[in-house]
Length: 262
Image (cartoon, rainbow, N blue to C red; front, top):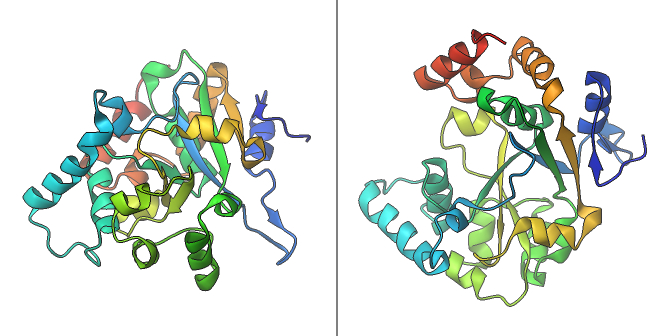
């Protein structure tokens, strides 16, 4: 199937083909997709960060939000205790940050595009970003760190080898995107096969950055009329809140949605 920037599947089979587009790596002869995915329940949603959504002079508040999170959290044992670990922990627990949640799994992204029953009357969307290629737009020292390790994404330790803080990274003039693997803070992070992206400047919009570099992404529009079929099939293959959000809250969410009438 020839890929356009935005594809609209008409059947479950077409959707599978799109989700695994360009996943074959000829070098190793294996399925190793260069894409990471973000699913949204409403097609009109943008890739605004939670930090941008709080409004006002949010870029000036970013430092204070993270500083006070560290101050009041009483968690001196946070992984390797870098600012990057604290940032991941803060995002994980709902603090407004510049991080955006992505996943290596197209099915996890499909879950988030179809999890909200109140949005079943509107199309959803999956963003697929080529995280292997965005490293070509990084500052040289970040690019070198990836090459040194032989990776396409950063850990907190790798980021800390180059920048000791978010403010230091933000001082770079260039606008770029970082793919950052979260520490395994709990089973939710692990089960969601999670990875973050963030931009070098708090005010930057990922939508805009990718729109200017169309070779780095594609989007799948999830028709509202397909959501019930997709949802039921995801439940059957065990992609649901019970698995992705381990614990009583996730279990209750899954049961409420699973037993809701069509």
